[in-house]
Length: 601
Image (cartoon, rainbow, N blue to C red; front, side):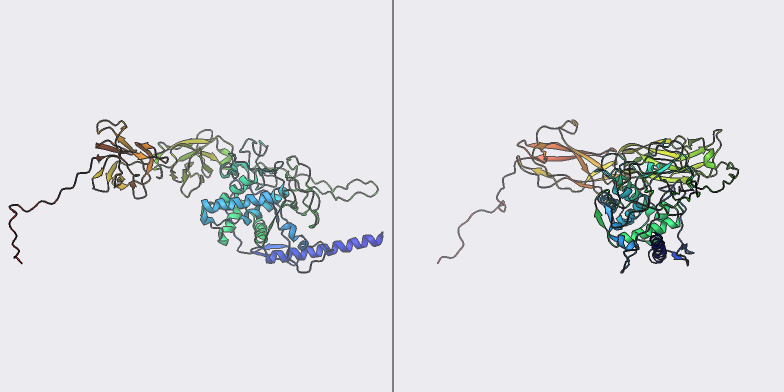
């Protein structure tokens, strides 16, 4: 028995030594701006990147994250020590549905924001650190996690302080916010960053397709180019403002870039070791189904834990310790001496805490023509209950509704700090091509006061003048085809009017705008005669060439009327007539036939 116990001690010592060496080597070779001290602990380089993103504006609220690192590639792994190299195959695998979500998000961002250069491996790295790839791929066929993944409440007790912003809709907590889902968005961030990644009409932070697409858009905001190392670091730090977080995500990013493969859903490794667990045991409760036992060896697939119930940690700074020594002779856990709790101090209220409501700071008449920039900007004033201005408060403006209007830069949200007068002015709105009304909502970041809504309207593009660009008469024989097509140019206040809708109608006469039932006509896709065309639009230069015109057997002079929003009108004359017979050339006047003057033979 003693010999067996001695062997276990020697084995544990070897494992600890190998682990220390592995961490030191990984820190030196895989993580950016990292060095290691003599004990293998990571230290930060002097010129580490920084971020000014506050907890309330970051994706996760700077919630805890999983700190396990990717394995090293050792050429001679010792099988008895459980070296990370023996887990290469398992750690490089990403559950099938989760991997598909990352790649679809990358493809979508390549279309909508090509300058961002988002790699799906970055989403995989963040997904690994935030939730262990949705707890090893425990998702249903639609990509929704089996059970919600909920982080600890952000009540300021060891974490950031973010009071409830969603009435508990996403996180089940009506007092404080919790990070939610496989990419761990806090509700206040999801409110503007959420996306529908699987096309089911919903934006669900618990769905890996929705969460991955939202994370991609979040990382690509501010015009960042993620192929640039500095922009990449800024984007990662804005997700969770921690240098250790940056190094951990960067390490997994490089690991996945070297190669990965698809594994079945539900067979991925469960995460261990969380950033608020100083012992690295993975025993802290995140309410996310994190394993409370050591991770299974790399060559085996850990069985999924029973469905967890979201819970709040009673003391987030102190992880539970299942291995406490017992008192000899009693078998009961020995407790350290209880120290008196230090007196609690009530912190002074921040400016955000004093905001009672938001007021419109004079914004009216939010109307713009499609494609134009709104002439007026939205202004909001933060006030106390007595109406006093509150400066240094972050206001979020969010574009809502069925619209493609955005703020300058192409985003549907903007965060602005109030000035000394309590006023925050949103960036200029840019109208899209969708016409109609939409809403811009102003809310206080980090405080659950009622939002303030502004109504904006996008109207059709207009032209006040239409003119033909050709001077040839438009003629045709009965039953024939007009040789020339009608070409026009639309202008507005003298400038070319692009993308303006044009309606073309064969009217009865200049004084009667009713549609004619005879004479020239267009053809639809089925070859049927039509005498009114809609859906025509001018090009970038304001010009438009109409489809081919045909004539029935009715001869006469007809009118084609073209109209645009904004008052542009043009009547074009069309003539249908039989072709005139050709006549021989006339002889010279006074000429008379006479006898031949040719000499006789």
